[in-house]
Length: 361
Ligand code: TXA
Ligand code: MG
Image 1 (cartoon, rainbow, N blue to C red):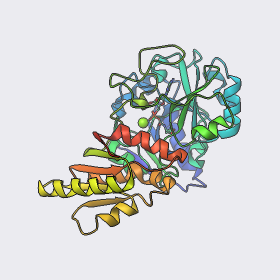
Image 2: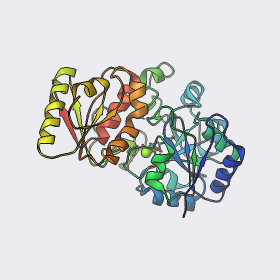
Image 3: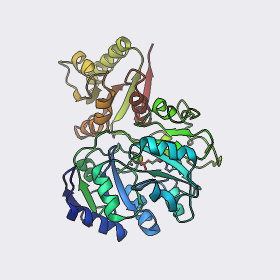
Image 4: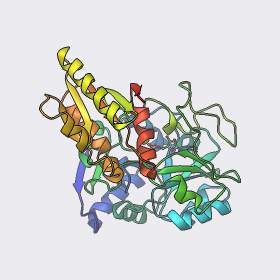
């Protein structure tokens, strides 16, 4: 299969290109498209065979459920058995946007989409290209991130091509995505909704709408899988975005946690040590780190100032891929400081991408 790449204007995507993408979807094809968070790999959500092809193309395990994208809350009607009041409130506040709501599944949704769970994840994206595609296709579009399973999510069409060239029908290239980290996933099937995956929309913003909202289970998930689903208690993978070893580069990622001084010193020691042993070293560097490492032969991917989580988020996955492309053996990175909502989502993704975490005072 050849993968067709069509460039479109982000704000005013060409109607012909969008219609072409929509017609692939109607016929069970696989189409990657930009959302405001990351690129998604879309498929007709009610076409079981197409959904199976999607899992194959991504090499995604069948027990990792998909997010179904729709144009509005109304369009979710046939996909869920009930829209809880909390879902209406959250949708009113954050849709279209980077929020995914897990609701009880209607029978129309194939089990393959939900990985056998009796819930389904729904999102209304805000990206103009995603919206145009949803409007043209008039279909619910199941779309995981458009990367090979466990790799960093794609924030540009080039990233999608790198992972999926020849495995999917089309890429609608709308330029780089805006936010760079995936949507927040919230389970609204219980009276006090629960954050299942931290994301672009933080706990404080969510609690301003639903005060009873519970934060994600803290700490690293058990290596054997995510915690049991709060409603069904299912032992399966209720939110596999929570699994460790996700979003990972090929190089070994070492994550440093602690105060600025000790972390800076430890990173520098690790660089000198690695260089002495002939390793190729990459650093996901804040401007401060880049300055501290000046003069050393390391590959630097700039993440901007530590105080700028939005830029860190927007650059994170691209930077991991850039360092991989330079063939480094190890990538060093420090946790972003602060309690910015985004810093929390970034910390979550770094933890899952990391092969090793170094804790310092
Ligand atoms: O921003 C995003 O959410 C992007 C764009 C493309 O929309 N999508 C995305 O999809 O990140 P994906 O497949 O990489 O992650 C979807 C995650 C699953 O791994 C799982 O954690 C959660 O959403 N999820 C999906 N359905 C679920 C369900 N029924 N119950 C609990 N969690 C679910
Ligand atoms: Mg993903």
